[in-house]
Length: 321
Image 1 (cartoon, one colour):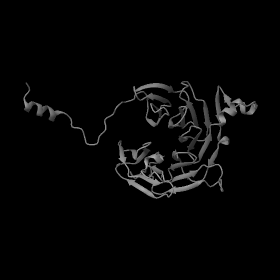
Image 2 (image 1 turned 90 degrees about the vertical axis):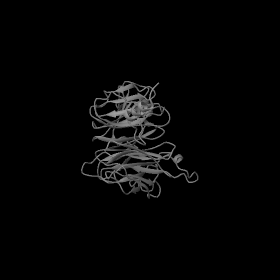
Image 3 (image 1 turned 45 degrees about the horizontal axis):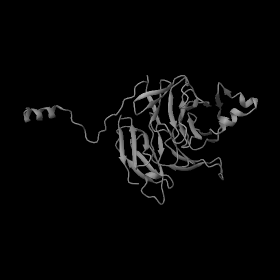
Image 4 (image 1 turned 180 degrees about the vertical axis):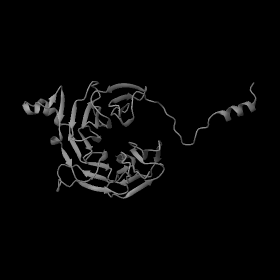
C-alpha cells in the first residue's frame, strides 16, 4: 500500500511537459559535421540528408537506420538536397565544389549524372515527376535541366557527346541547360521550389531580398523575361543567411472550386510570409521566431505550415486557406 501523499510527491518530482511541445521520435546519427538539408524520397519512408562533411546519407525513418551513403561524390560541403515525389526515387544535390549531382536511390555507390557549374551551387529542386531539376549558384542565375535527355546522350553514336559519359556518369555543363534565368536576382539565390501540381512555375528566394516566380512554360512571348511575379516582404541582413522557400499543393485549400496555391518563404526579420501565388498578395505574415526564419515547408495535403529558425525552434501552424 502506497500513501497518497507519497504519490503526490512523486508526481511533483517528474518533469512537466511544456504545452504544445512535440517529442523527438528518432535521432539519426552519422554525419560528422552540420546537416544542411533534408528531403523525403518518393517512397515516403526514406529521408536524404546533406551535410558539410561532404556526404549524402539515406535513412529509413521506420527503423531509424542508415541505408545508403554517398561520401565520395563531392569534394566540398553539400548545401542542399532535393528529391522527386513520384516515380523512381531520385536525389539531386548542390555543393560548393561547383557540381550538382543526380543520384538514383537504387544505386548505392555513386551518382548517375553530374551538372557542372562555374561557381558554387547553393540550392536545388526536383520537379514532382523527376523529369526536370533546377539549380542556382553563387552567380545568381537560376537554371533548369531536362533529365530526359540523359538516355539520348548515352545511346548516341556521336563521339563528342559520348565523351561526356565517363564511367557511366553523364556529365553536362551550363551550355546544355533547358532554361537559364539570368534576370530576377542580383545576389546569390538560396532557395528554389517548383509549383504544384505541374511544375510549370518555379519559386526562388535570394540574398537580395527578392522572392520571384519564374514561368517555365516552353513557349513564351518574351523568352528572356520569365519573372512572372515578385513577392514583397522578405528581408535580409548583414549575415546573409541561407533562406528557403516552398510552394503549396492545391489539396490543402478548402476552396475546391478555384484550387488556389500559395508560395511561402522565411525572412531575416523572423516572420514567415505566405503569398497567393497568382495575385502576389500577402495571405499571412506569421511571427514567432526570435531570429531569422531559415526554412519553411507546407504539409502535402493539410493546411499546415512548418518553419525552422536560427533560434533553434521549429513551429507548426494551421492555416485557414
